[in-house]
Image (cartoon, one colour):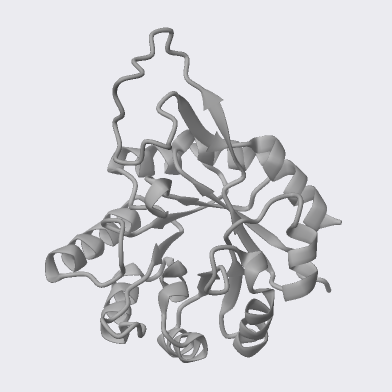
Length: 249
């Protein structure tokens, strides 16, 4: 029997999570601050998303942007955020910790997994910053991680499809390798054929113009002045629907 392909949407808000569900996604990874690659969303967003979604809901556990080498305070925050997710009935958490040499931090990852169970555990694209992908994969399999999100240690999945294919084959049934990074309806079929992965991760986002009538051109709220102040990024349910249709066929 052919295994069904799972589409996971990285949603930057409850609105985006609902759009992903409307588009036919099977799972949402809820986060905030996609500009920095995603950080842990607020308590209220997690709670309300859980109440409104009928599909699987995973939550990103990442206390800040930047690297994946965390101090003791940050690690304690991660553990507490995982406990909050468990208490709210979240299906899974998404984690990632490296040591200073670019290896999987096995001790701390193991501790987070113990706190998380029985929720599922995904190791996120911290893997793409690891110094040796197959050593890192073996460590994650040994730790019992359920899923690995990776762009093939490049900016986009399409930049290193050969590595992702090798990771999928090496992992076998021990861990699900989930490509993510630059996936859209224009390339999902080619990526699926090249990697034979069973799960795929994407934002499927679009920008919605602000409803503000007055716009002050002299002020920017962020450090990156190239980011538009008067546009809101949300998941496009129609794009997700296109992707789901393509992989279903």
